[in-house]
Length: 461
RNA sequence: GGCGACGUAGCCAAGUGGUCAAGGCGGAGGUCUGCAAAACCUCUAUGCAGCGGUUCGAAUCCGCUCGUCGCCUCCA
Image 1 (cartoon, rainbow, N blue to C red):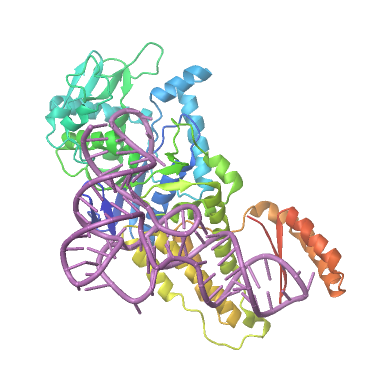
Image 2 (image 1 turned 90 degrees about the vertical axis):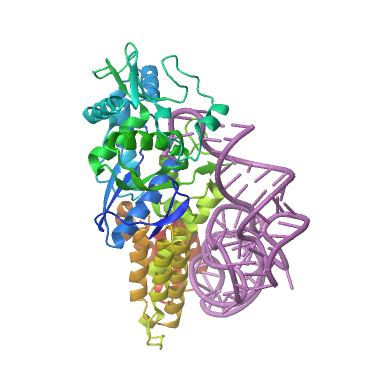
């Protein structure tokens, strides 16, 4: 499988060291507020990527962090009067709930920054010992100029960055672009003891520590949104490679494009967001996943009401095909052969192998759906094709389940009673009454479809 | 100011040197149906922001112009 590597700017073959286990680190969230669809996009993409790797026989060790201590959390907590820790844990719990609802597989490990202090301190000490870092009044900074290849991921130079630097040079820094590994605690802030006094880790060091501790010194894939390339991932490389002396820290750097709402990226700081919770209230997980996977992961994607609704209908189309019944079941069909899913599977795989081109894989699924529907009309056997559709859809994390299964079980007998009555009315050519029942059910979100084998119903959306 | 992307049909979005420019949604017509829905069939970009250039051949490579976005500060 070939994957585009941000570091080299080329597609490269994914080849885990032991040939079997892919060690993948994906940057997680800072849990100070609700997750939005942009986060969902990133995690849906990496989830589908992981599912595909597993489908192809790789084992995946997937680590995703929580930055559960940082300025924003402290800030938010001080305003609400909540403990920083409680605030973070509350959002982490919500995050899990929402990711589960999106059918995102749990990572192997979810380390939290606040639970990795020993490793973080070990790293900082090591960097100081090698003079890659220096303490200054309780802070510790990374010496950016000490590393000749600093900037290689984001393809920048120190001079270029200084030109338009908006960073105000900290008084303690030797050089304006040096970044904090450790921040001295201000009064009242959460703090941990360290050789440089009480304080807390800087943003970037936690990820290096967690990756090193949970995956090893050299990992296969490091992923996240494109907005993390600089400074976050650049700094992670700097720290990790300086500490271990081994390059590359990550074999492939994989970055997803950002979700735009209107003409700007959806982000917490801009406040133009739709939360995952809101999205899930109105749309199925399949629809949200289809929306995300319908675009190439490295390109920006525009979110709009119209687009997500298109995904709703697309998801329904796939479900309908997966549940279709061949007309041969009625004895009408005469064709003995079966719909052949093999070419569609091949297209699906070829697309995924070439830099995880999910939109082309999705297109193959839609074409397979058409093949199934056509086969059903012609009375072909479609069971194998439907099994293939479900299997490949599952690789993308699509369930093809109708929504609201639990309430469906409860209301099913009542709906069926109504359908029975309506069927009798239709037999008696009482169409006005029959249509009235159908209309009322439609208004309540129950869609009816009259077919040669009787009336089928489903919950709409 | 520096760096990096992008601009493909009404909308979303693949394609990135050579049979027909994927797929979804929407729209038009048709088949089926008591009607509807679903499904199926046909159609919906002689053209890929604009202008030059390279090439036997370009949406696809190069240059310029216009427009949009991202990063350079927290951010998936």
